[in-house]
Length: 337
Ligand SMILES: [Fe+2]
Image (cartoon, rainbow, N blue to C red; front, side):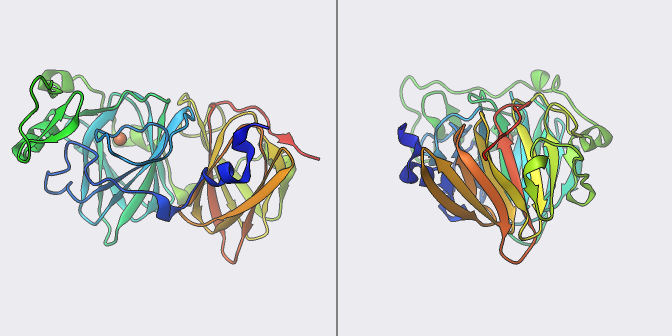
């Protein structure tokens, strides 16, 4: 029996919302007014943080990285770009997502909305609601290549004493002199930044799922194991999605009334469940061991490949649950019994 298939190691793959550890100095803009109060979370995978001390709940590579951002009202996440696709899933609050070299384009996303922002495009987001906002992020790939900041973000950071050093990460020059021999990561030139892609609002809208306009899949691979009142939506993937795929992972969303669920199945890919709302009971079976966890809003559970699982919406309210699978065209699930 491999060691991960034990009750203890399964428990280590469960991350409660309360166990997600914020880092307040993950990035270069951490002293810039308007961006200084943001929390950054690295939950699965090596992450993209610029602070080497950031806590990561599950380091094991999954083919994607899952993180989160938490921001009080009016706090911004500065304009940056990534080398792989970045998906935002709004969990709590209302955010304005903006993009383009100066963040000149924008749209408002509410709880349950999802956007997939393409590579080579500057994006940022501001909590425009009146309570703490929290969104999950999925970045494609194990090695995401890190963050590319818009040049003005570096300039603003330096005005507040922060520079980025190659081997040290974010460095506060007002507290410590730059170590001898340390190399600074230089900001991107304005000329290079001007070559980055931009998208009209209509183009970006094609990469957004609005939670009030969801259309459930009629035929889907989990259908034969469905029971009760439950719907499945494919938000991102290779086919039958509105958001284009090719991101290396599939993102499904299941909505159910209490008592709705999926019977026992396994799949050959790793799968991460993220509870957006309601309560979901997940029962797993591996090498004759069984266990179960109830996921509440904001909790996350990573299932290893080939482990059996049944999933049911429990409690009193309707639930919604994301599935992140580490292939953009996952194989059909294997039904158990
Ligand atoms: Fe990002």
